[in-house]
Image 1: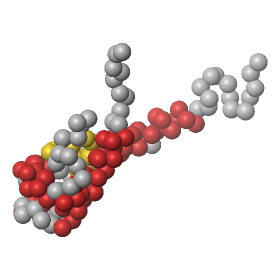
Image 2 (image 1 turned 135 degrees about the horizontal axis):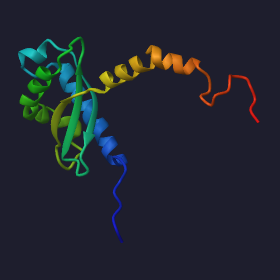
Image 3 (image 1 turned 90 degrees about the vertical axis):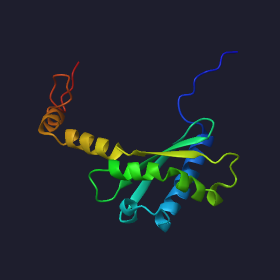
Length: 142
């Protein structure tokens, strides 16, 4: 019997990812990380994606009020071992303590770009132009 490739993360991956996200948020809120850059920033963990074996998680972060997120991501990755140690109490039910990698969250940029496209004059003109089949709105075609 051939194994079929899954189309997305399993329910277990999603559940563990959300648990890790909550634990990371708590560690960041408590201010336990002694890094000058991170002590003054408000870091938000928007999503954690787990590998199928649940040993590695990729945490997507955004920083409130900052355009350039890369320095904060680098600081989080420098402190990843310390953060992993602090996740222990919240993730004690797991067989393995996952390693966490941090990446910038670009989803908000994508949303803003799509919103700007939808509000552009070209799209507005196309939407006002009618149904696109050559007939005026409200007319019936036979």
